[in-house]
Image (cartoon, rainbow, N blue to C red; front, side, top):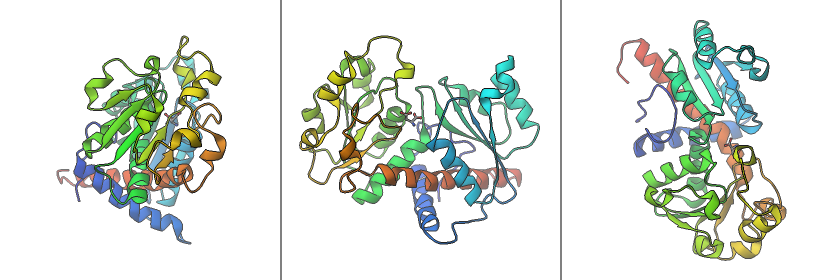
Amino acid sequence: MTFAKRHLLGIEPLSPDEIRTLLDVSDQYVDLNRSDRKSGQALAGKTQINMFFENSTRTQASFEIAGLRLGAHVMNMAMQASSIKKGETLIDTALTLNAMHPDLLVVRHPQSGAVNLLAEKVNCAVLNAGDGRHEHPTQALLDALTIRRAKGRLHRLTIAICGDIAHSRVARSNILLLGKMENRVRLVGPPTLIPSGAADWGVEVTDDMSAGLADADVVMMLRLQKERMDGGFIPSEREYYHRFGLDPAKLRAAKPDAIVMHPGPMNRGVEIDGTLADDINRSVIQEQVEMGVAVRMAAMDLLARNVAAEAEGVMV
Ligand code: ASP
């Protein structure tokens, strides 16, 4: 088994073997979660603190359930009401929490790089639950697990990632992971929502949905991240849906067995047709949510093992 990390800050530092290890352990947790007992002991006696400086529904709930199922004491900090509002810096908050000896810190922050900075200041394992437009590693891992289970492999697939690439940490982490596993990745969206320099990432880029989806095995839709837009990136939502919203007609360009993904939260009728999103023959959106809990259990389990091994003086 290969996973020699103390923190999970992004996909960028992970090797293909480490990604495979995380997914293999996740598969075991999918089985546990589907069983009646649903509980493990891997984090028994450990303290997990969730610090979400940005709103979150599924990611925070998923990390909380993952910790509870593995026996951790889980605390959700109400960051909106925290001392950060009184002027304390992120680092001071982190040092204060660090002095209370948590074992796992799960952090979401609106600024890219904030979670890496925090990880340098604390002794416990840090998991990035999304930082600005930078990375969202557990999302990319849960997407990879969903794809691997649906397609039976995670290499030599054609994957179209569509929509607001420019503001999306989900897209960035997925591009890194799918590239490391030797897939063909296409970015599809209006030029205003494709970052300049994307063509150097080893991906194909197009603003034409039928060309982008042609023969795709996987169609991954992204939310329009309006909270990160400060100008007119799209003419109107109606026009955007007309050109880039996924509906059954546009999906016909993809392989007949192509799966449809969305990280949530979804804007129905903006990025994706609501009926298609609910079509259990095409959409794996609910599986993504299910895989999220298993991936987070696996990540916290593996990090906790590494921290314990380090404390005993074993090199990780
Ligand atoms: N939930 C994902 C994220 O936190 C995707 C999104 O918000 O659109 O980045």
